[in-house]
Length: 307
Image (tube, rainbow, N blue to C red; front, side, top):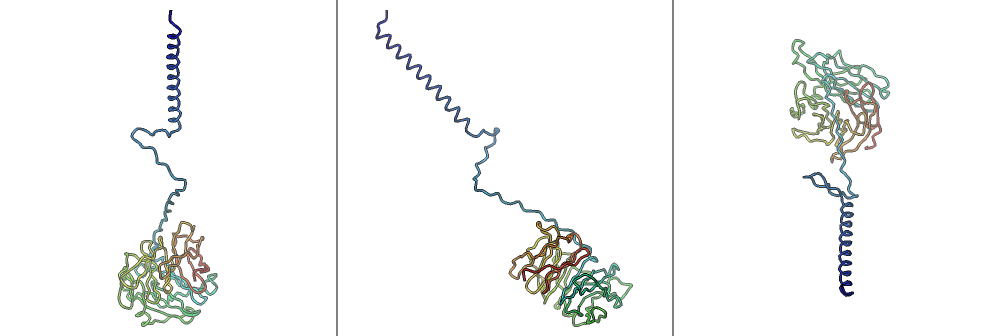
């Protein structure tokens, strides 16, 4: 028979063993609960994504702006605004026999009068400028030899009679800058300047400052050195002193956006012509009354907040 001392000793040993087992079970449960709060592991061979700060702002995705194909050369448009009178023209083609058209309006484009100097034998309209209510200047080709399509010679003409009569001015032609007929060049008083692309569009000049559109880029230059004006998806340009107005496609304008680029290169939005179709022929000009666009059948004026 065991003594009471021995019995108490065995009882203590059993209690210690039971307590140790309980502690072990509690430890295992605690570890399982902790692992359940952790993020689930990814598939084998992949790392879990890093934590993202709540203050992190994702970079915006650039919006793609498609540049419409340039219109045919003979469908190019020209627009000139001066002293409350609008002059507009469709280029035509000397080489292909497409007749140019020139019109004048003195009521902001509500009505137009055909003033094409067809009697002077013009075959293509190249440049157009307005000076006063009854005065304008154009550069056009004249086919001197009907048997030779390459003989499309440029002439400078002026009117002082609202477009009813036009006369040649050789000195005006010598001092003018205009797209060289049938060539990827711009004719200037100091000689031809190579254009930065095979088919430049909207070639314009103001006080010797040249501007044009090449492959959807608005470019400025005064020699063979052309610089990008920084307005993508360009359709037409209109230089005005140090500034350059650009009609272009923009993500936030359903039609044609007009912006102005300062001499320092700053770009400011002027207006959105929501009615204009950027895939059509577009012409642009600016004067003291505002900015004018010609797209589709309408010529529209917008206030020039940048002036």
